[in-house]
Image 1 (tube, helix red, strand yellow):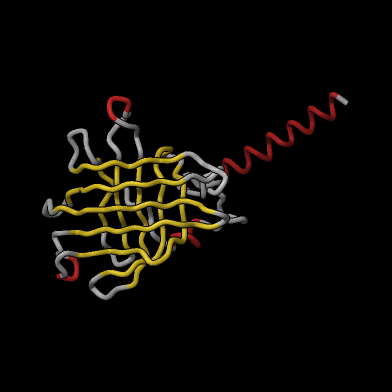
Image 2 (cartoon, rainbow, N blue to C red):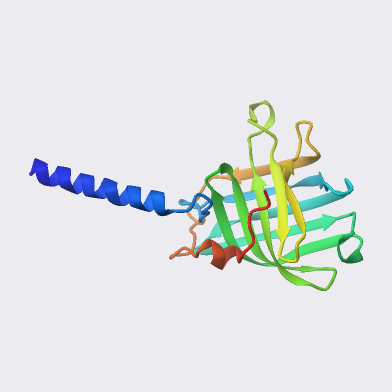
Length: 193
């Protein structure tokens, strides 16, 4: 009996190692148990230090995804629209990035005031509050038309301000089953890192 249990344990360990080593390091997935994230604030672009404001939230709810993303780039250089406004119409994904355990990505579809309908991927990272923060919170956004604002600090001497809060799971924060793939949630958009 002990040899059988040992053989089963060894087989399970080998199977787990095969799954872990065959999973790409860049893989992102829906957190289990699922949670949700909220935040708002402002950042400055790399190109010309123009201010951009954001308010966004997302997560899992009752077996699906929910949320909203609102982003306004006051520099307006993109498509010569001033300001350049991105407003989500559908949330198609909510992902956990193992390289950034306090971060979540929200993916979906949005409209812009330049007449576009496009995919987006937002990175929000909660690093704690006040003196207990391990680092400033961060925000970034990537659009399928090539627009990119890499994830950047919101405070602590960084270029921007605001707050992001990662909330604990509750009974209503169940995700879709089976969980969609990263491609199904975000298309070919990489995280805005």
